[in-house]
Image 1 (cartoon, helix red, strand yellow):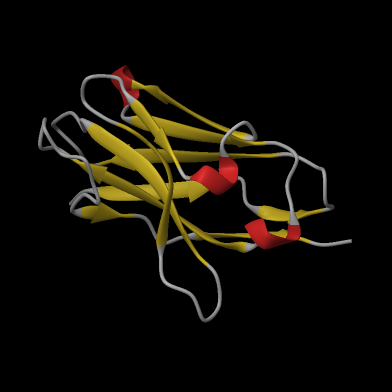
Image 2 (cartoon, helix red, strand yellow; image 1 turned 60 degrees about the vertical axis):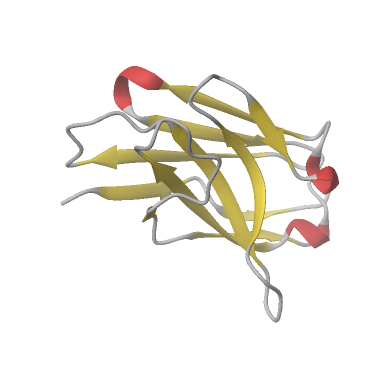
Length: 120
């Protein structure tokens, strides 16, 4: 059974940084698409950042220049470095992955979510 396990969420002051990690377990195949989505209370889930099978990256306009996504293909792991955090970044962040090589997301597999709260 494939599981995506997130870590690294928490409470941070505005302007601070956090690094989220997502590791896949139970997987015997490579995830081509890996990304992060987030959902704030009362809002729809939205794409934050993703990396596709060809190595391309995609970011939401609201996080460009502040967030950076990276991956370790050998271990089916993806990271999200979040800098200059703002209160509006507060949300539950979900890891997402797909084993389809042409996938642009969202993929079939989801993590359980990790809370990120930006507040003074």
